[in-house]
Amino acid sequence: MQVIKKKERLIIYIDDIVYGGNGIGKCPNKHTQDFVIFVKNAIEGQTVLAEITKSKSNYAEAKIIEVIEKSDLQKKRNYQKISGAPYYDLDIKYQRKKKKELVMEVFQKIGHIHDIEKYYDDFIESPKTWHYRNKMEYAFSSIIYDTKKKGDVDDFGLGFKKSNTWWMVENLNKDSGLFDKKWEDSLCQIREFCEQTKLPAWNIPQKKGFFRNLNVRKSYKEDKLLIEIVTSSININKFNTDLFIKKILELHEKRIEGIIHTINNDISDRINYKNVVSHVIYGKNKIVENLLGLDFEIYMSSFFQTNPLCAQKLYNKVVEYSSSQNNDTNTPIILDLFCGTGTIAQMIAIQNKDAHVIGVDIAESAIQNAIESALKNNIKNVEFHNLDTGDFLIKNPHLKNKINTIIIDPPRPGVSKKSIKKIIALDSKEIIYVSCNPSTQARDVKLFIEHGYKIKKFSIADQFPHTHHIETIFILVKSIDNVS
Image (cartoon, rainbow, N blue to C red; front, side):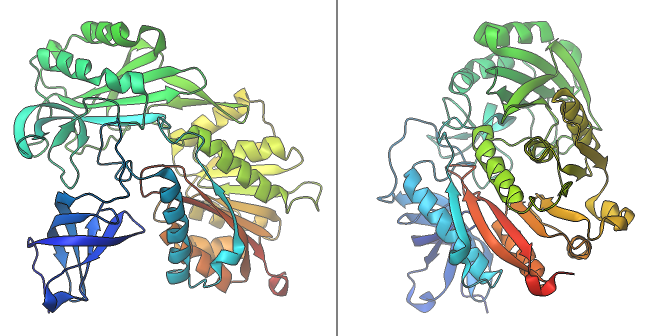
């Protein structure tokens, strides 16, 4: 029986926050005292007007319509608040405290590891809590959120999707505090230039228009920017790329490494680089970043850690964990699954020169990048394979009992049960599991424990300050009772 209906609006006091970015509160209605409501991006101590988006017999989900009363925890900031950083006005010490608590709670509830705290090793803090990102994706839209009218209006927009909507953009008018300040302070001028071309911004509901996205990557090593303007092909002959280049260089002349024009006629906002046409219209198509002394070439399509300064600390922890078990054999074999562009594999290889490191990933472009950067970094004890993790494990059963360390850094859904069984069958001495989703990691770690592994220790990394995202790294070792 539903006690609260979908689309119903309620005033809710937020008691706490839970993992995943939801505030949790209870409806003050006397008939629903124990009815829990999860409110997206709500903050402990707020009183909000929320609209129910999903209702079940014992809980509901809701979105914020209006913050009626701010939390005492919120501080005044000089940045523009964006939907992707709901905790930007919370003290960073409070954020870290809550993230640690939430990780412990997730592993107790989902992983059934009730003594999880005794394995806790370290909390890896981001060296920069502001302006830490090396990539940002801005959306154009012909529907924008009007902050005065508190509703959508037809206008030319460039910024981020308004929280809890998919069809309209809130203009970014000043620095968000997450990316490069000089770049974001210039975004208004770029928006004005694009609007003056008279070519329309993308209408998200109707799936038509010209200007679609403006994507930017930054190299911390060189303080350079790689720009990508994404448009449709409609009236493309009216888009003067020379004038666009001139405008960008006028604003950031010495920092622009390259400008790319990508034509995307797909109705989906997500770019599949196999189905689009990209042209370098100025400079280069890549930037170079340095992590722990190694150079990595990064393209617009590359997967690369968005907080490179914190990633270095995270990778140092991976190296530390792997080194602790690999001193009992002359040539340890280390397998890096879901290796992406090979950052972890190369760092492990350079720190363990007697080891043989194997990297595996399904993304062809990522593996190609990994091979190229390993050659550039003159790393000879690493090899890469462009295969699905499951397929690689099927094709290489001879590796059973020969692998010292398996490193897994999967996407948010975690590792499939089939792949976990194949990983277990390889009988590795240890598994180092890096995750950007503690919920699926807790589920997977539980399976590894059930099949003879035990937790040695784990750390938490605050890769994404001011968001609900958390990274965790576990080292699992083969139980003595289960050693073959």
